[in-house]
Image 1 (tube, rainbow, N blue to C red):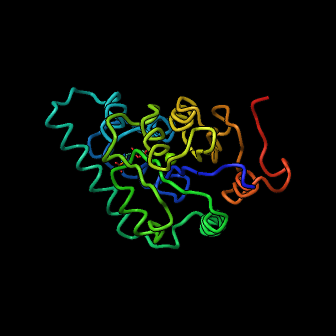
Image 2: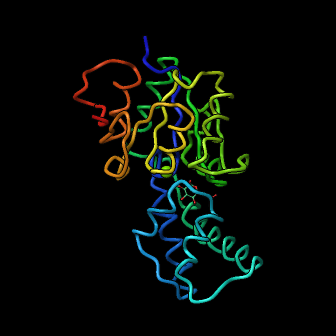
Image 3: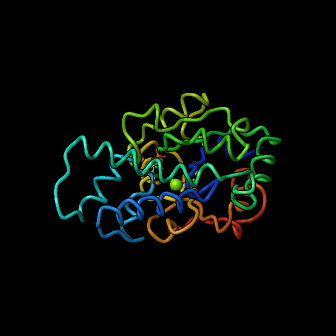
Length: 226
Ligand code: G6P
Ligand code: MG
């Protein structure tokens, strides 16, 4: 019997490396505006909405921006970001992710995406994996982005599963906080495993299989809470 009946995947930085494209687009925008920006500041943008990200980028601005200017800046960032997305193909799927999705699907595990991005469906289409997910909750249907639990509560409701039947896979502190606040167990991948406590540590996306299927040993995925 599988250990989790549903898995809710974050998108950027989990199923693909669009987190890097977000960084490059913000960096370009900041440079055009003469605002200092680096990878450390970028870490604070992971998982949060475009408009909230812009507010963080503008903390280093030498002047204040009107609401209309902020809307235009957010649009410009998205235009820069979409230039990268246009070039994406199924080859941009995180290494090992295709096999993970196929294996979980074959085991009858329900799959969802829970992302703050308004570009999520476009990216999933470019990756050729939209049809793998029963549920896609993205930035277009959210009032509040991560660390608010809304995205994961909506995913649970649409999956018809309870919090303790699911697992969230995340690369961002805000996403882990959102999952914890929704009462869902967490699997962290990437830098987040050094930044906050997660229930399962994934060194590669393939480490997810023994965790969800309840096979293998804790050598592959372990609880780093204690
Ligand atoms: C994800 C990313 C964030 C991004 C947000 C909004 O959560 O981790 O870095 O700001 O989506 O993305 P969007 O594609 O709507 O600008
Ligand atoms: Mg992410």
